[in-house]
Image (cartoon, rainbow, N blue to C red; front, side, top):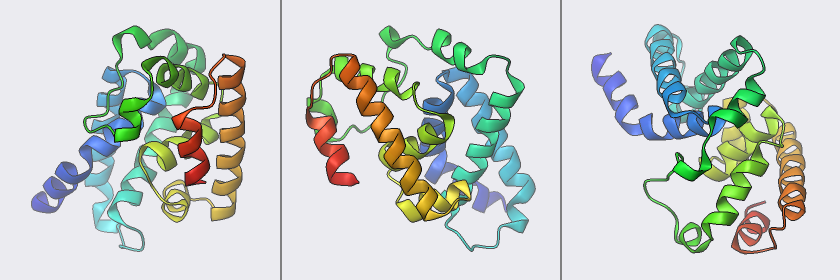
Length: 183
């Protein structure tokens, strides 16, 4: 079990941390939640039946941990907005994609700010699909939803994100092209 746990941790730690950071937007809280995820993994690994991939199983646990955390907080939405300081650029991808490198920092920051305008479900889907690169099927499995619900939530989330970005004065650019291509 120790070797299996170590393999899971080494293989998916960055992805789980990144997912939680995008959801709670607080580095310390994300680190605490990652620990909670792996505590739950240790407690429940013997019940993992292998019907899904380990990655989607981990994201399913991470999703529950994040939602449990939100439920425990009063006014969690405002706390997220208030606690995240974009000027410190707390969200940094270790290996950015070439397209991401070319997008201006201002547009990326605006996208993350506008992501807050999405519902929790929309944010979950958008983070899993576009930041964690899960397929529609993997996202559905991780969230315990139907593929149809994922597609609908993704479509609505992208609409909200795009509308708020346009309101903020962000013109179409590489990000919009990437979203159109990946639908």
